[in-house]
Structures are given as structure tokens and as C-alpha cells.
Image 1 (cartoon, rainbow, N blue to C red):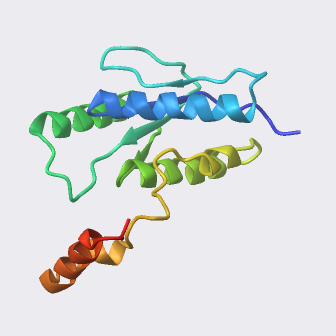
Image 2: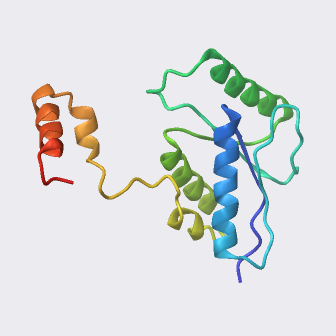
Image 3: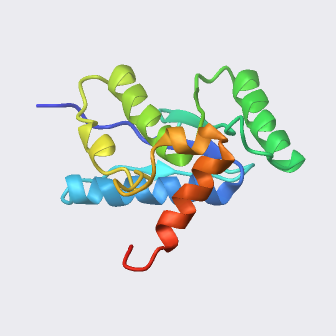
Length: 157
């Protein structure tokens, strides 16, 4: 039998992202183990959280041009955690990547608990119909034009 999952705290800016991820984690948990309780919180600055919680800070994707306010809030979270001597894990990238990083981190931090349900229910998982990552990073104008022309041809969906 596996041990109980520790509560999770997600700190991020904007707060809406941390709150959305916490909500999605709770929904995934309810689908995994509807008869048991577990908590995942996204506190705002100044709010408390359980001392036994595993803390994650949602960092910025290096490609994002985030506002100074977002950068300042993430730095403030990190400074607060350092001052309190609390361990935490930084999660970087887009939400889908952060979700997978969270799952892998929890598997290593609390290996006796069952965390497989997280990676199985990633709400930010890209659709199989999306173009490959190489298309996004190619930068070839002719290739891009051909892609859009193919999408606009009659009979194409």
C-alpha cells in the first residue's frame, strides 16, 4: 500500500496560472481517488499553507516576455522561501511542461506515494493534431506559406 500524498503548494505569477494548475490537479486527483482527500493550494502573497506541504514555484518560460510585476513576484516568492529555509522546486516552461516536471519531481520526493495519475491526466497536453515542434522553430517563410496554403485549399480540414 502506498502512503498518503503530501499537500502541494503552487506559487506563481500570474496567480491565475497557479490557481488553474491547482484546480486541475485537484480534478485529476478526484478522478484518480474520489473517496480520499488531498490538498493542492495556490496561495496568494501573505496567505499561509500547511508546513508539511511540498512547495513548487512556477517559473517563467524563457521565451515569454513577462511583465516586470510577474518577475518581481516570482523573485519575492523565492526570497521568502529562502528566508524561511523552506525547500522548493522551480518548474519552468509552458504549463504542459511544468505539469510533467511536477509529476516527475513528486515521484522522486515522495516515491512511496502513487503519483502516476498526474502525468496520465495532463490538461495542457498538446493535441496529436498539432504541428510538430520543429515547425514552430523552423523560421522558413516558404515552408510556413506552404503550410497555410495547404490549410486553406478547398476540401482540406
